[in-house]
Length: 555
Image (cartoon, rainbow, N blue to C red; front, side):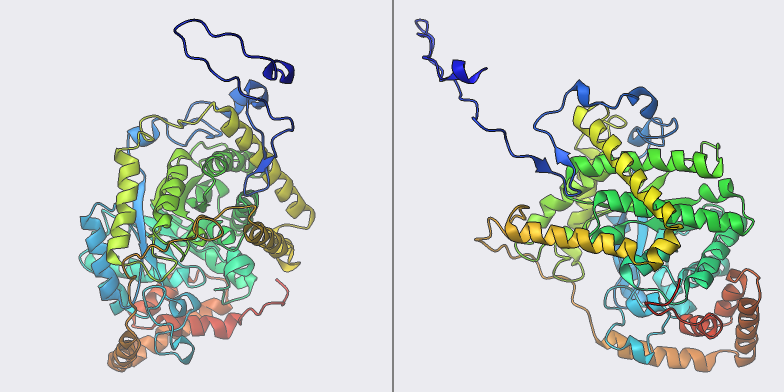
């Protein structure tokens, strides 16, 4: 309706029919809105906004390039794996939480490790003081892993382990427990994160310089392909880059660029890229903007399939499939009015489901305050179950396909991610871009811009910079017991004193010799652990050969 007509006198209403005021059209255009990735959002989308090659981009689910999903029927056949990330204190405490969650309907395990375990230190090391069991479970020896996995059916449940620099050690612990139980290695299923590049970028739990780190990663590729064929040997993580402040575009581009780097390292090692690609998985963040996140997941599948064909000439349909785990955004949880986090996590989880995730962790609403309490962890699991069984989002594959808005966003995200990957290529690849600090700088700038937008009120955070009048009080989060550290130190002293020192020494010597050579390091790591070496002792043996990476050194 034109402005002229809007200002005209309303016609006389017919008898018996109520009059209706004619709305006025704004005299100035509506302000442009933006997604968190700074993509402009139009007031309305039409058929004209659809990509011209839509039919080619979006074949049926289960068909390459898998924009609409990697399986033909998606969740009609099987829901995603419901994993609740858990780990705190001792292995026994964490095992109790795992058993509780499995009894409540959780379908996969996801292990959080404490910082000493992530950094290759035993619980009684001087640098571990104050951190033992604080942000995850403490694992230092075989007895710890046996306690962590006690009574859990390793041949029936899949396990995800968020561990990077010490990934070969933790996987070896897991395999050693299975061996001791008589569980076939071929029956073991799960994922080890094993992604060190993002540690140099965003998280900081690296140990060794990049060259030996890549060697350990490819050693794990080779070992799992030969001995644990159902295990995903790497989970390339964009999650932590997003937590550090990256945009969805940056998360998408930098994650896939890391994946390409790992695959190139495997090829250089002489491994078959097609075979390795089948066991690569990804780990993405689910943020608050429902539609941008759905589009990001769809774009990731298409872009990965296209890049594998272009760069590695991979044609095997199974190898081209991008499989991914999703975790809701911890950085979006607020300590103010924490019950609001329930709504945020629900939206983020829905984005993951509408985007076609294979596995999902939903954060607990109290995680901005500390480790999740038992009640909050159960509610987070129930949130997934409501999405799976009540929301209707699982009734059909890729339910938002064909949406003018979602298809336009999917194409735009893919285009912008390709541009970033091309810039990385121009710099000489991901290692060179990280060494130059370029990747880190891009994330820092994005994080700074987000914070400015929140502080200015341009981006609303409910309960923080708007509607902040009332405080909701949740149940208290999990309380860490500082006595765990003392108990573990005493236990480890007894563990070392009781072992066969000759067998232990021989195993460490073999590991050291292998590290100085070119052999695969996973078998001697496994032998050392079975000889009762600790995680810290194995890591120290490798430190003695490889050295320790310090920020600012050449990659």
